[in-house]
Amino acid sequence: MPQPFAQPEPAAMFRLFDRTAPTYDLLNDVLSLGLHRLWKRQAVARLQPRPGARIVDLCCGTGDLALLLAERVRPHGRVIGVDGSAASLEQARQRAAERPWLPLEFIHGDVLTLPLAPGAADGVMMAYGLRNLASVAAGLEVMRHLLKPHGRGVVLDFNRPPHPLWAQAQRRYLQQVVAPVARVLDLEGEYAYLERSIAAFATGTQQETLARQAGFTVARHHPVAGGLMGLLELSLIRNGPEPAPPGWPPGANPVDPPVRRDPDQSPLGIPTAR
Ligand SMILES: C[S@@+](CC[C@H](N)C(=O)[O-])C[C@H]1O[C@@H](n2cnc3c(N)ncnc32)[C@H](O)[C@@H]1O
Image (cartoon, rainbow, N blue to C red; front, side, top):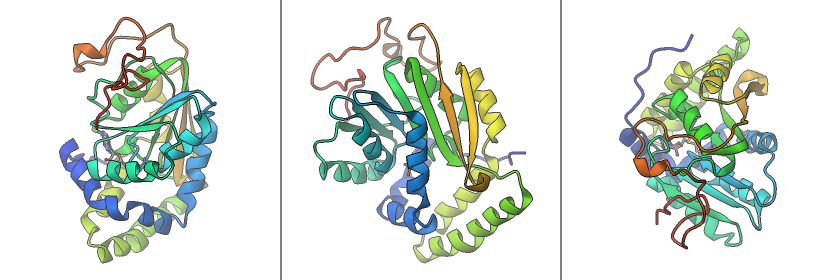
């Protein structure tokens, strides 16, 4: 069962990721022995992005996945990365500036409240973001809201392994590897959050149920790396854009699918944050 856990407020969450941003990529490589790169490639393979596709990478962080996606959809596609941590996005933008030919842009904001245009994306991705949102259900609703009628979504995140041995291995890894490394970098509090958030995260089956409730017609959770990680594969068949989720600004609910209006608007009709 998920453990009760008070999720930090979004502003506190963004400050947390602002603090980890300078060392985030290095720590990801060290702590996963580089395996997060493989899992992200597996996630991209499940999304099946095609050249020309429009993809949104929610909770894009420092942008490594958004860059991978942009390689797959170029030259005529588009990738929009969205994140609430300004420092993480700064890293993402610097990274993207090294490959200016990639069709990629980043937007700063909370994925649960930004007025992202509905029904315009061929694919939506979220890596290690869903667990951090105030509501898993709301995150899945946003993914559905963004997709075109035949769009696909993929969520990559930690998973609580059903097998006790793997569960114990995961706990030991978090307490005996992650915590000491974080302590050395003075990020102990930030990484202690990781263990609590995994314990509180919805199981694969619960994620499938929530995804169906959010309107996905297909929702399958695949364990990765012995169940330490999980990939939630989502697809959708529907007839057109739907009303914005409750609480979204009225402007987020145009009747017609968004079109590119001017150079200051992203191809998905999202005002571009600069
Ligand atoms: C663990 S990092 C993952 C970053 C990247 N996707 C990756 O796979 O390395 C989680 C990211 O989610 C972002 N995040 C968490 N809640 C968010 C929200 N409500 N809106 C936007 N970004 C959010 C954080 O700022 C952080 O950059």
